[in-house]
Image (cartoon, rainbow over all chains, first blue to last red; front, side, top):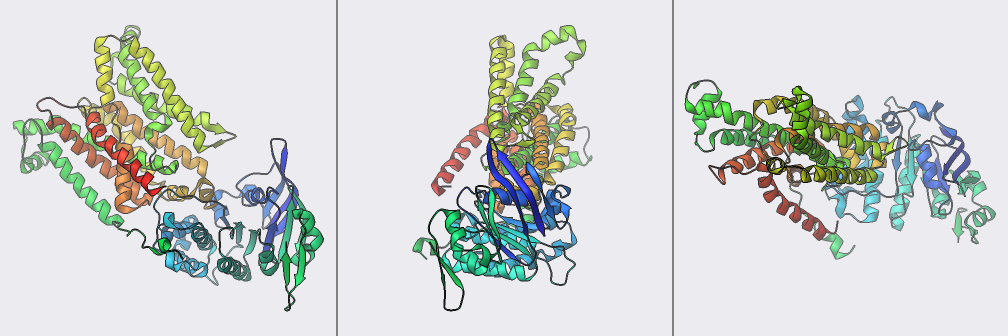
Amino acid sequence: MIEARDLALRIGARNIVDGVSFAIRPGRVTALLGPNGAGKSTLISLLSGEHRPDGGSVEIDGEAMESFDPLALAKRRAVLLQHSSLDFDFTVAEVVALGRLPFRATRDALDDDEACLAARCQSGIEPLWSRLYRTLSGGERQRVQFARALAQIWRRENGVSVRRYLMLDEPTSALDLRHRRLLLESSRRLAGEGIGVLAVLHDLNLAADYADDVVLLDNGRVMAAGEKDQVLTQENLSACFMTPVEIMTRADGSKAILA
Amino acid sequence: MSVARVARPPALRRLPRAVLLGGLAMLLGLAFLLALGIGAMQIPAGEVLRVLFGFETDSQAAAIVLGLRLPRAVLAILVGAGLGISGAALQGLFRNPLADPGLIGISGGAALGAVSVIVLGHLLIALLPLAADPHLLPVAAFLGGLAATFATERLAHHRGVAATGILLLAGIAINAMAGAIMGVLIYSSDDSQLREITFWTMGSLAKGGWSGVTLSAPFVILAVLMLLRCAAPLNAMLLGEREAHHLGVSIERLKRVVMIAGALAVGASVAVSGIIAFVGVVVPHLVRMAAGPDHRVVLPGSALLGAVLLLVADCGARVIVAPAEMPIGLVTSLIGSPFFLWLLLRRKGLGA
């Protein structure tokens, strides 16, 4: 479990993150929702160990974040960021293989090929495999970066393994309808393997369909957090996004959010 | 999918690592023999080999090969390898394929050190006889390069983090300061000093000799070894600093190692040979065009190709205006600047 307690980060006089406590639990998909500028990306940078908070603490499976160096962190969690630019002519295969960097010169490096292959399959990027990354569209690049993150957290089944986490910052922003679903289905499968997934999403319906838990962030504070059915209510969403939101129940009992 | 998207991607022709490095090593051997054989007195390759392996010791050819051309060729290899590999590593660190070792102040600082010794050296000798040592100029150039890099790095640091953009700007500022002080020194120099400064900025391997080799070799070799170990983290760096951090790279340590190694290699090279431009930019590019951007190929490949290119350029410098000699920095600039321009235009064409 990655547990944030009372996190705070200030930039100048602004509180970007202000007293946030919540957890990424193994085996569960947690959706992080909130309006633009709510502090979602900043929160990810704190939870992933990229920045140190001004206040509060982050613990990974009971150990303080400060006790991990970048390499030890990289073996526990993978992060997919919003924008990735690349000015050099790497192929898609080479970009995905970079996900195995934390394992170079270790026994796990023996699994590199298998990990990349599994990541390629799961993210559906076979047709792109030998293309140059620079020639891809935005959505294709996003899927390749997702595959890189998958290669990083991949482990052999039955292998001795630590708990792993996947943090996705708007992983679906450039994806078409089908690939949004595919990406979240992959995330669900990973949660099924015991990985803790945190995803910043803008599409409330994706959160309703694929998340276990939802955290609503507004103005750097947690407005509501918990199981999705309790959090994704008309009152919560309307207040958080400051726009009227309606929730319908489909024939199969699942929820559709209209905004 | 649109037609444009379905259109075939540019075919990917990449030389495998072993082929590229093996080929470059062979080229290096050939260029080495060429450099030992060519010049005012042509010596056939067979005779060069006999001299090198000690079968011919007291001929005129032996004296020329061992006494004059061998130290010069070894120096060309050291300087070329140092400039090539530092250029490659710095381009990776700054995630900019057009970056140059001059950017972070190394060349500017080294030039200031050298010009100071040329103009003020005689004053120093009057105070301190030790300063008459012929090593004074290269040592000053080396220290100047290191100091400028250190200043650049310090200036860019904020809360323990060096922002890459600020690093580049700080490098430009440091170069400008070094240029301004150099201007004052040049303005107050006499004719013979002016001439010496001019030739120094054009670069030459003629004066280094064995003392140049012993002076630069330890630093260049150390730098090459340091940089070769950075190949994998530099690959991650190409994805972005944050991505590299998430892949387990200690960004600050990587920046420090690459900058120090770059300053060592470039500083030592500039110290013994003057300013030799464009090798650091052009060589890594050629390697990337042949074998892709993986630093496990680009770093050793740039060291090898830099050495080959400088050996060949030095042959050119000795032959073009024989029996006189052209400064090698002019040769590399004359070839390198149009090539650099072509690179820029090509990138513009790609819209990258």
